[in-house]
Amino acid sequence: DTGVSQDPRHKITKRGQNVTFRCDPISEHNRLYWYRQTLGQGPEFLTYFQNEAQLEKSRLLSDRFSAERPKGSFSTLEIQRTEQGDSAMYLCASSTMTGNTEAFFGQGTRLTVV
Amino acid sequence: KQEVTQIPAALSVPEGENLVLNCSFTDSAIYNLQWFRQDPGKGLTSLLLIQSSQREQTSGRLNASLDKSSGRSTLYIAASQPGDSATYLCAVVIKAAGNKLTFGGGTRVLVKP
Image 1 (tube, each protein chain N blue to C red):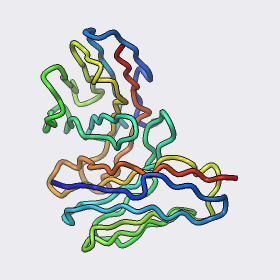
Image 2: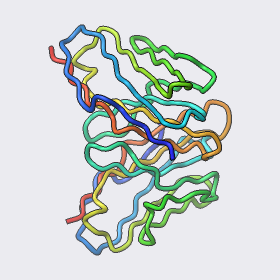
Image 3: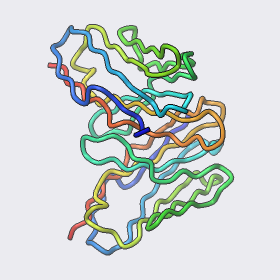
Image 4: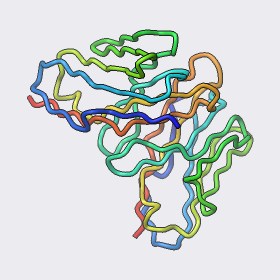
């Protein structure tokens, strides 16, 4: 296992279009997190899953955002009707639920809305 | 609400000097604290994880301390090298908060050869 994988690495889209990002966590990790990071800021929590259940969503996650984790494996984050303010780095992380809960991050997806 | 602060926002040192990076948090009821490194345009690389019951963790030239009562953590990088140039982020996990991380704004470090 090579760690957390995110796809695509970069996405440029026109305002109003829908985009979808994918995250493949470390295989034995049952928790998966999505964060958003804007330039010069620390990442901000968006949502997290424990296995296939979405347990918490931040107020940052507007109705245009939806995340899924079917079968508790990979996860997708979809943004509908993108706006310029959605431009950011979207980071995925995974961890175990008990014991050493160290979080491991993927390389992120850089979204630019033009 | 937990707030995490990292001061300074940027730091420049000559090669060989020791680096001292500060992190403060407002709620001492943390589960653990994690330090990360981020290179420009890249994801986060975990450096050290300190559990709430621990006072420090060491890995190679890196040493991180934790003082929960005062809400502080310090990351020491000994004998800095130009390859240490990056942004360093600290993040805390609050107990009973799903292990989600609350991040500071980061300290951008430049080590000059």
